[in-house]
Length: 292
Image (cartoon, rainbow, N blue to C red):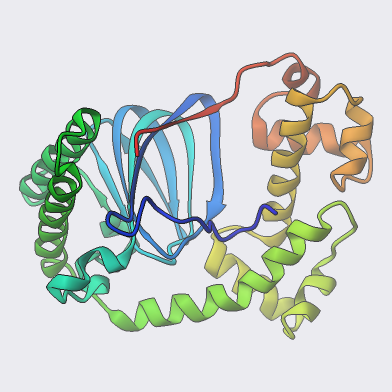
């Protein structure tokens, strides 16, 4: 079942780490909003993208790094190629570091651009990221220890960077509570997106008034509930258009859209192309190349 929270086991018990490359192949490439319990670092090789981190939307280009704390709601949209490093908090349990303090909490500070202030931190992280890729490709005896050592150095650079920023642990606790509350609704959307879901339905599920629910959802997700729902349905429809022979009308109705005309209008708004054009597009927008 596809849910809003990304749940997976990273690597092995010895090395709970995953590294892979993601390629968004055109300007409409899109990784939908999600969150997870592990840490994530993105390093952009080529191109540019708009990265959502909670309610902030920032342009990221070649050479920049994005650091994502556990529980950060994030998405990526654009045409870019970037490296992804994911690792579990328990990776550093033996050095007794408060992991939440290793990552800055201001969302705007989670995109590191080459500058007089941040460049030394970026240079250190980029060097270690490249080291991890090379070590994993060679897989010499003891490579797991070498990778772990490189991640320690990345964490050290992040920790030094975070000390220059205004960190606030209460923001983390607040975000966790909001996501735990919202996860109930997003799992419901996953199970019932083919049905008619109204603002009233969604607000009742969380025991909120419709007005408060709309403000709450936008605050956490950075978009309205209707925008999220339509985007979710379009992502489902996109997969069907590319992999099945079902008619466009059938796909529109089976993904929760009330009419083919509304589906065409919404799909073009979020995908910047028509469903009929998508039907003839055979290549996947996103390619994952697992290295670990």
